[in-house]
Length: 464
Image 1 (tube, helix red, strand yellow):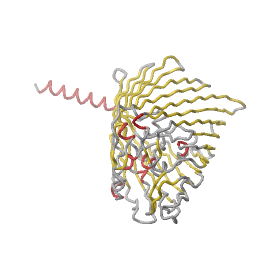
Image 2 (image 1 turned 180 degrees about the horizontal axis):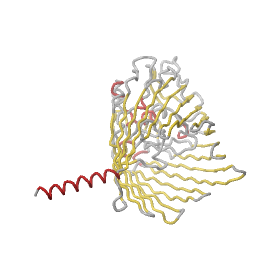
Image 3 (image 1 turned 90 degrees about the horizontal axis):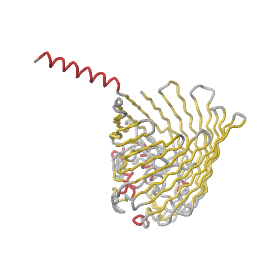
């Protein structure tokens, strides 16, 4: 019996080795270090954080592959503590609990099994089932150390080129690292910047879509997260038409008794004298449903349907220069975005004011390849004016209750990126921002809130 068993063992080991050789491995290690910002208890001026991501994809079997991925995010050990009056920890780089008031909880190393999905692909059909990232207008946004992930079924079918359809159903999502900033620092605790209150203590955890959208704090004295009522999830359908000159897409999201969201975008490209011009328009509308109509998020009632229109004109020259002019205009209602989406043209690195009521936003940006091989620069400036939003917050031990904007929201961004070798990307990111609640008066009737940023950050990403 030993000989057959030996032969079987050799066969099994050989098969596993051959299978392992065909496994695709994607790995990435990132470092984020904040060099400086203002010491005003608003601007995040301190953090040194690492992020590691590993993803394995099996060989194709009957047109199907299995992918498994994980993230780990943690403090390098150099991040300070908010107890120091000159330090404001950048919690949007971390995944720990920010509701306890103890920075050791925020800086805790957190790991997440972020992806486990099956992918089936043939000539016309693509299906993904399981935990995955989703590239759709209302699920994709900017992130830092870890993006958002979703438990979903995602199907793409090509009727004939260039017409295709997408169907999807999402049951749960896990907030990524920047979600806490999306809700608080960026969204001014109004759920108009891609996250709900759940981001403050329940990041990197898969939660029902309805429960995460309607999460609140437990009480005025207890800041822990109280999840809302669970829902049946979010269904989506999209029709897309794309050829060399025309890009048309229509998206509809049905979120049970919470909200229905429509997103439309149309683009046209033309070439003249070596310059490619792209003209695009977008329309975003939200119809709040019965359960959600009287939900109050810091006194902003979502009982009136919201809509936003936008236009963009961009000019590309010789694949080295890209200039873009962007405009959006919102109606007099807040646009609720608890699931991470951010498709608007006027979004900048920090500000998401375009989702607020009565905002006319203007943005110009420039992307330019520099003479040094592998080096690029990006410049952007946005003016958001004042919205009709109101909010309440605590800063520097002072309470600001039911305040309305005092300053014009605006932002200037500069990003210098350099790729010295194939797998290494470095960036210097500089942001000057004025929050529209800069200058509002606290309940003491004296103290003015200083809500401005002068933020410099270094980022390094190495892909294996």
